[in-house]
Image 1 (tube, rainbow, N blue to C red):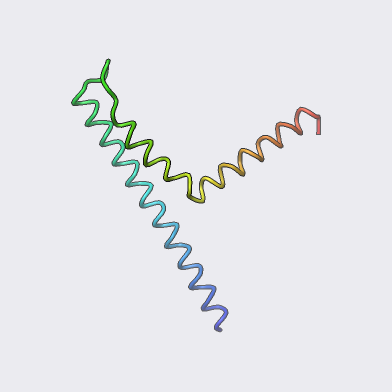
Image 2: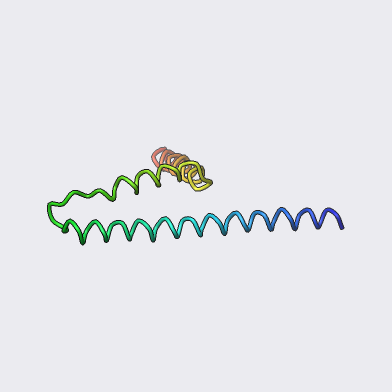
Length: 90
């Protein structure tokens, strides 16, 4: 019974972590869309200074340290291996 309770607590913590990630990702996207719109409406779309790239890139650099970054690197490695096997006819 104790083992089942521990597994439940670990699963619950994992679900909370995933939920928090998606909440923060959604807020990141909404805020950056807002910054883009503010930049577009105040400077105009043509020939303007696009300052919203600064906050966007600073926020995006923090995402390098998430589980998604490690998944992306695994996907890139897997894609390279598949391409190599295809070229070799395997």
